[in-house]
Image (cartoon, rainbow, N blue to C red; front, top):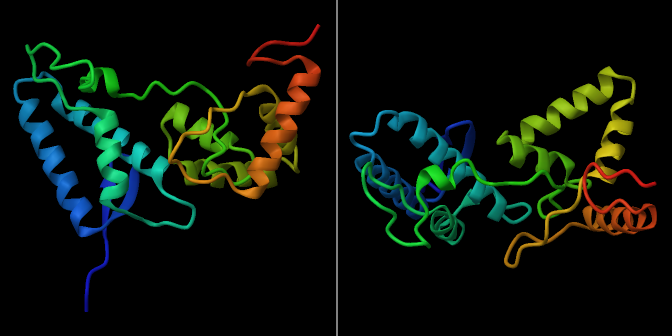
Length: 201
């Protein structure tokens, strides 16, 4: 019997890692913990770091992919950067400190890559740093509990929230999110809604 993947809990997210990715992740977290010795609140920073790693890895998973490999983990860690030791100046512009890198500076946008319908739930999950699956389940329960009124809320968010730019090397956009994006961008252009909060005259 061969172990294919290990389930790892990173703050509020649970992901599966293959052996090589798990070893690299453990090394990264151990190095970060050692750099934070003497920090007044290392546990909070490490929790934010774990969540940032989980968010970056989930963003890079292809549709249908369940296990994080080095191909997803290494660029995620590079984007997050290293933790800055207390009292130490920044190492370089490309090596962002954890205080700068976490929480991630997501703006509130729909995210087409990895979306199921239009990317509203994925965008909200990234912005509020929630688990997207949990948010989708809550949305379905609200849909059933409100007799379908949540459909109007979702459509309103589809219309008002702009779309995040597509990322090179990110997961491909599925058929339905691609159609929703094209239609909503067309409709927003017709109505003159260029950014969130702007109401056409």
